[in-house]
Amino acid sequence: DQVILPFADFRDMEPNSVKTFLWGTKPGILKKEDDGSYLAFVGVCTHLDCNVSYLADQRKFFCACHDGWYDENGRNIGGPPPRPLRRLVISIEGEDLIIKREGGERVED
Image: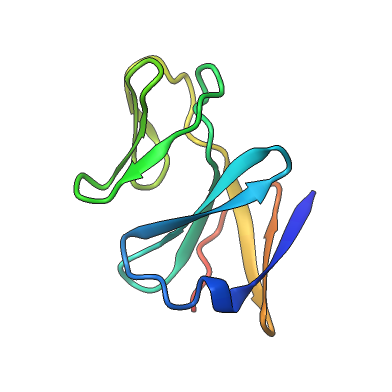
């Protein structure tokens, strides 16, 4: 499983910000780190698959369904989520941003 997106849509993101994309039928989240690298996650809570949102001022992901919390790297830190957010592998090839299942390394801009 993978999605290919135009990197131009994400290149100008501010540090500590996120943009969403479609990962199959679920939301995907691309987060730009302070150092310019990117992280990608499946944007659903590992408790009961509710969508999560990123609270930039707190540097945390939040699931409003049952008060679940994840740190800025997707690690579960509060509430009922039993596991971290699912990390995706990202790579930049030419003008394409390629996001794949498995792994989860940072990619430099």
